[in-house]
Every structure is written in C-alpha cells, then in structure tokens.
Length: 427
Image (cartoon, rainbow, N blue to C red; front, side):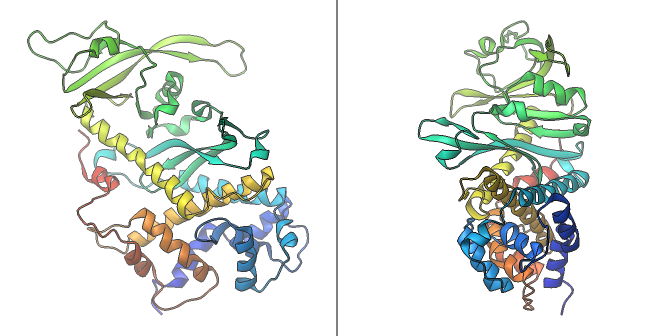
C-alpha cells in the first residue's frame, strides 16, 4: 500500500488526539473513574470527531454510531449520562491543547504578508439555544430569549482556531478581546463589533497591528495627512473627520486622526484617558456614493490604502470558518437543555472544525500549485470519510490525494484571496 494512504490519515489524527494521552487526561479531570464496557477514547471519537446526521450533532445518531462502529450498545439514558461535567473538562483540555499548538506553529508568510508573524481574524457568531437557558445565556431579541455568543480568533490563512470564549449574546465583543505580548508582529482583522480605541491601543503598544472598519460613532480629529494634493485641494488637518469628508469625492483619503483612549490599570478602580493617533484611510466607492473607511496602525510608507483594504478582505476567512462549522460540523446543533452539555457540544464542534481545516492543508499539499481546495466542499468530503479513517477501514483509494481531488475547486480562475495575498507585494 502506498505511503500516502489511510495509515497517513490515521497518523495525522493520532498526532492531534492520542489515545493513551486522552485516557490519562480523562482520569485526571474526572471523566473516567473506572473502566467498564465503554472505552472513553471510543466515546470521545464518536461524540467529538465523528459528525452524525448530515453534519448535525444528533445524540441518537451518536448512540447508533457507537453501536455500529465499536459494537457497544447503550440505552438512550446510558448514553446521555456520560455527558458529565468531567467529560466537558476533557473536551476543554483537548481543545485548549489544539489551540496552543496552533499558536506555537504559525505558517511561514510571504508576499504582502511577509512582515507579519501571523494574520488573525477576530469575530463572533450567535448560536440559538433552548429558551430555558436564558438565565445562563441571555439573548437580545424578543423571539430569542436565550442565545450564546461565540467569540473566536481564527488564523485567516488556514482556518485554525487560536482562541475562543463562550458568553451570552448580550455580552459586548470588545470585552472579550484578550491580547498580550504574544500579539507582537501579528496582524488582527476586526469587524465593527470591536469598535474600541482602547482595544486598538493594547495591540499597538505590544508591537502588533490591526485593521478594522471605522464606525460613524467615532468623531476623530485629523492631525496630519499622508498624501499631498495639488492646487486648492481641501485641507483636512484640524477638521473633524466626517465633517471634512462631507461633499468630498477624492478617490483616496489617507490621514492620521486622534482617538480618545481609556485604559484602567489592573487592580485599580479608576482609569485614565489620553489621545492616540491612528491612521485612517477612506476609499471612494462610486456605486454607493460613499467612502469605505478603515482605521489601522500599519505605516503609510509601507502599505498603500488599497493594500490595506485587500488585507482586510482576509477577514472573510473567519466567516468561512463559521459557515462550515454551522452547515457541516454541528456548530449550530445543540440538542440539550443542560449548560455543561451545550458547552461540550460547542467545544466538540470547534475541535472538529479546527482539525478539518488542518487536514485541508495536508490534502492541499498533494495538489499542483495552480489548484486549491474549496473549504466548504472539503468539509463535506472530510465529514463523510472521517468515520472510515477512525474505524480503520482502509481502501487503497482513500488517500490525501484522493480526498483533495474530491474537494478541489473547479473554478481555476477564482484564485483564493489567501493565495493572492501570499503572492502580492505589500506596497
């Protein structure tokens, strides 16, 4: 049998989740107290790795998969009772380890991204849960009294999960942006939910970079311009930004603006306020007769306004992460009213999503440089084949190359943005 076969696929999964390590950790966290008819590793594989019911998380399908794959027949109540707080701690430990390993191993970057150590898309998504859980996770809509907000940091180029937090839907996004000195030389891409100058300043002061759309709720003052304009062009220095842009149809505006930053030192009740200048670019969109505005701390002498807009488009990779997670990997299916079971199923879906995206990288290496894998199609292929891999069913054709060809993007002219950025110049 060729080297690039199911044994390689099994070795890939074993390198992410090792059976001996998982059984040891299960005892440490209280998920396993004594060995009976159900092996904790087999139970983990069924619940966390195998996706049942056309991509959704169905407890009944999991129980049937346990019987069909491992020959263990459990009554419904016997299967349910194994979703204990200890099992949630086990799933959390595995997810945390995968996130730490992904953090330690950023991919080499080139082209427009060569100046960064990593590119991280930051976003959140809302997941509906049973109305009885409104006390734990309060929703913000009248028809949805209970909902979870999942905050994530996703590697923009690969789709790997780097950080996550589970809160109520009513929880503000910017409060969950946790950065430290590890953020140095990394580029963060935000949406408007993270509209806080203090968050930008925390990234800036440790040597990181960010790009985010500028909301109209800000009223910064222009302190300098990065582009010179001939003749009697309007001078923006000293003007409030949006007042200066009113009636202006300049194709590109590149200025530095002062924003008010509020920080509160750790352990102290009162904070301080100061002003910090950040770069603001505005690109005129004739179709909308309006400017598209971004705020960033990327230097004007290295990154043109259009290059920054192109970099920001990489944030849509996190939307792909959520779409694949919800439509194919069970992130939107939470059939329980118990908070610890809901958290377990969310973390299981995050593990599946991150491992599926890592597997996509392995498979894409077998393709020619002019071809690539469609992430949405890859999730369907991976979901259908992972049970065969885990159960040791090894037909000769089940290889990385075979899986890649099943998920290859048929449109060779639609070059993914991640590839265009790796090939393009940054200025």
